[in-house]
Structure formats: structure tokens, C-alpha cells
Amino acid sequence: MGISASGLEVEVKLRLSTREEAINRLEGLPAAREGERHLEDNDIYDTPDGTLRRAEKMLRVRVAAGDVLVTFKEKVHSDLHAKVRREVQTAVGSAEAMREILSMLGLVRVYRYQKYRTYYGWNDPVSGERLAIALDDTPIGTFLELEGPKQSIDRAARQMGCTEGDYILDDYRTLHLAWLAQRGLPPRDLVFAAETGA
Image: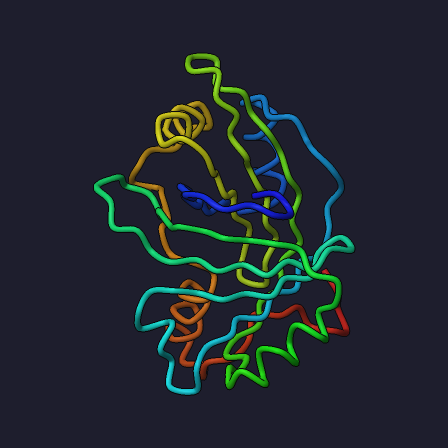
């Protein structure tokens, strides 16, 4: 979504084996690159006892490409095979001030995740709708995130050689916690190692 917006978000993720594979599929769509690859650093806030997560809601402070965005999302139950959430998002001037405000309200940072993101766009030739696509490089792998009308998501996915069976509806926190559990590792933040960068 934009710097200041609210509405309904419909999206799916696709896991790719490598960044090169993801780029090849995007070029074959073809999707147009929109902007440069950039680091996104995200902090998730909740009450100390996890009230928001239990209610399938999320409050996030994101620092990316010089912008600071505060986003609230809540799950919307739907028959669509997609992640559907109501979203309100706005830009703020200072991440530090926003974090302090949330702390003063009794909220705590419960999770941090990073990704290198590159935005792409695709115009659905059938509906004319614009599909937003993000290529995400994360510490647990490469993903494409498709956001827009469900029919356009399905058409783009099929054109890239994917089916609904390939759709991932979990957020990065859930995916990361499952990744850690499979390896017998304790919960932790999803961040790049400082010594290696990305």
C-alpha cells in the first residue's frame, strides 16, 4: 500500500529456490521493476501477554528506503485461498519517537524481521487490474509476494508456472518460527547476520 492508506489487502506468497529463479519468472510474466532493491526493517508490537496476536491483529513499525511506516492489520475471514486483511497504514516522521509512544502505551516489541525487497508491477491483460509484486530476499529464503485482486493473483501465478497449491498464506513471523522449529532452534528475530550483510 501507499504511504498513507487504508483498505483490504489480498495477497499470497510464493517460495522460490533462488533469487535468480524469481527474477526469471518475473521477466517471463513480464513484470516491470519499480524502484531499487532496499532493506526493510520491521518491528512488531503487542501487549506483553500477546493480545493482538491472539486476536489475529498486527501492529508494525517499518523503516524502509527513507520512510517510516506504521501499519495496523487484522485478519478478515474469507473463502478466498489468499491472506485477506484489513489494513491501515501511515507515514510518521521518526521511528524512535513512534517506538517511544508505543512503549509509553504499554506495548512491547515482540518480533523483528528484515528483508531486502524489490517492487514490481504487472497489468492483468484480462481485467486491466494492476498487481503489486514484491521480490523478498530474507534470511530464510526468497519469496514473491503478490497483492491485488484474487483473479489477477491467480492469473499471474499460473503464468509463472505456479498453482494455488503453491500459495503460502502465512506471514514471515509464522514461517520463520516454523523454520526454527524444524531445526530445533529457539525462537528469535529474523535478521541478517551483521558480519555478512546480504
